[in-house]
Structures are given as C-alpha cells and as structure tokens.
Length: 214
Image (cartoon, rainbow, N blue to C red):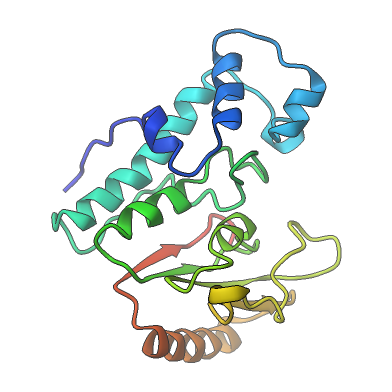
C-alpha cells in the first residue's frame, strides 16, 4: 500500500537539527538574503546551493522518512520504503553533499521510541559521515558502511580504523573499498560482515540506505 506522508514540522526537524540551521532556511524561504558568511555557516553553498522551495523540500524529505518510521513503530507494516530518503551527509547545523536535511537520523530517533537497538546499513558509494557522526558515542545504534575510500573522494571519512568512541566504541563498522570491485567479491564480503554484525548486535530494526550511486 502507498501512504501519503505529511511534511515534517518544525518540532520534528528540531529533534535533530539546530534552531540556527532551521531559522536560516526559514529566513531564505521568507525571501531574506543571507550573507555569504551565513550561507557558509549552514552549508548552503556549492553542492547545497539555495533554490526556490527549499524549505518545503526539507520538510518533504524528512516527512517521508518519518512517516516510514511511524508505519513501523505503529505496527502498520514490517517493511517501509521511502524512495526519496537517505540524505546521509547532512549535519545538525549544516547541509552537505547534496543533502539538505538529515532524514535518516530523524527516522532512527523516532524508531528508537519502540525499537531501542537500530542497525543502520549503508551501501551508497559515499561514506555516510552525517549518520555515523550522529551516533558515534552511542551503543544503541550500529552503523555499517560499505563505500569507496580514496584520496580526494568525498567525504573523505570512513576509514577501517574508525569504529566509534566512548560507549559507541565498536559500534561503527567501516568497509572501505577500491575501484573495480565486482559482485563476485562484494557479495560474500557483505554477507559475512552483515551476518556476523547482526548476530552480535541483535538489532530490533534495520535501516537500509541503498544509495542512488552505489
């Protein structure tokens, strides 16, 4: 079945994003011109440049992932898909890497109201720096990423030695890969790591980001 998702509210966006970031986007939506310094502070330059309807776009992206999470927490389904989600580079205070809103983290935080232990699995070619950073110090979210890792390749994070810190130590698994990887090599690697991690962590729910450029 297809479910219509409402736009995310300010209150919902502020579950993760800072008031300063949301206020900057609201000012732009109201027609105010921000200074270059202000735009840089909230990441709204270059690959995340300002465009008409940007605030509604943020609300739509986040709203879709939050509705998918609500369907799961309410027991309305066992599998939910939001084709527009997975903006895994966005940070609390800034947009980054074509990602204007951190819908993944917002969805995970909602899921944890019912499912305490969340496994986040990402197979996008780029490392999910925004998601990993958000849960770096917690042991209730396990992040696993299979991604390209090479000098100069965005975002430059996700080395094998990056495993989390504090209570989150060993709760970040990074599998940096090189160009030329074949399905024959990738599939057993993926299966072995994910199977072992699932058995050890015992997640209550899994969030999968497949990536448009995997």
